Image 1: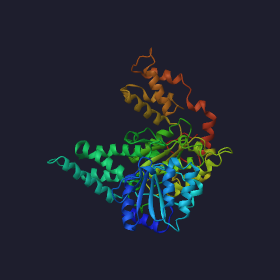
Image 2: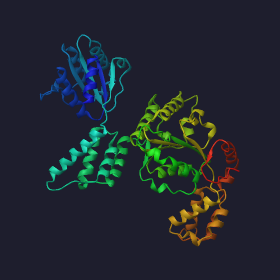
Image 3: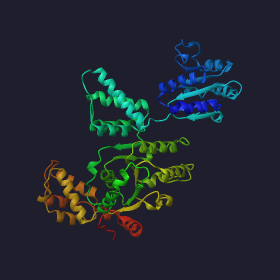
Image 4: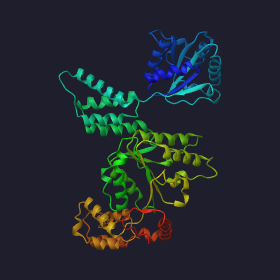
Length: 496
């Protein structure tokens, strides 16, 4: 086992304190029980409920050593080498006596090799102990091991239900295995068991459910939001240039061959409310993969270093969910730095830029921005993004298509209305503005839903100021900047 080998190397290198952050506590305990036999050293586990207990064989726990201070003093007084797993010790690290005892045990490691192993779901070691410690991370199961887990759970189900055969297609099993990569062994086994025992089959529906469960495991704090079924985003009105660009890159992006150059991402620039969010969703729909949205507002934390840690966790979540699209909305707001942020903005930018340049996972980045003046120039460099697209207000042809989509979505026959007149009357409107006009017309008569005609829609359009009027100066300035620097997302962009 690779983990066993790596742990043995660390211990033979005279490591006094080993830190293991993992939710797989039983697996860690099992590894050290085997390691103790392999090294010929006694191994113990400590918990606040049981005290100290021998690992290699079944023995009665020393309950009189359940109190942390008593346990550490007992270990300190021993004069023989050993491995001591302290399980969930993190709440006791704010006690200066506990910290001092840990330090004294570690400092005498050269004369008596008592190795302390702190195991917890999350653990921040006090500064005075860090130079005496090494962190170890359990390896995640590879695809070969995932397939073994699927076979094991299939056999277990068949033994529990004699005479019944597990129904599974090769394609569904392959997809299930691919989507389990990046999870711990215990989580992978549990999700496989759920899929198998639900109906005695492994199907495409199991794969979809598994991806949702996998996302919930990887991002329990909601740092990234998840949209699995993105097929509905594929046929958004307009964006012909963007769609054609994406279609040419779909196959290279989905290709699992690590040696192939893959598209990395795009930046969508446009006026606020102009349809950049729909464009971002269209990317996921065009590629046919999950869409993850990273909200910078959820990243920022008052404690030093936590914001960058949250970002790294979010980016790791995207990599484990690959292939996927990672959408960062209004990226300029998240990367803005000021005199009062203690350099957090610059550190976040550095973390993001490093990831953008070095990532190997099939994660396509889509960043949207309203204010180009606040974008750091490093972000726009080729190699980090592939192209910069400008999402302008829709032209007449796109507006006609938007009316068609939103009327049909509400059960109204678009051919019964004068779409050309509506498209002309809605000049300067965004797609969202046109949708709201349709909704308002449906409820225009005493709040009762009805089927609007052309005149009703024209009346709603006339009662609303289009975005092109409300934000005329800002749109003009943005178009002027974008004219020579960006690619229009629409085929005939009105960059006037």
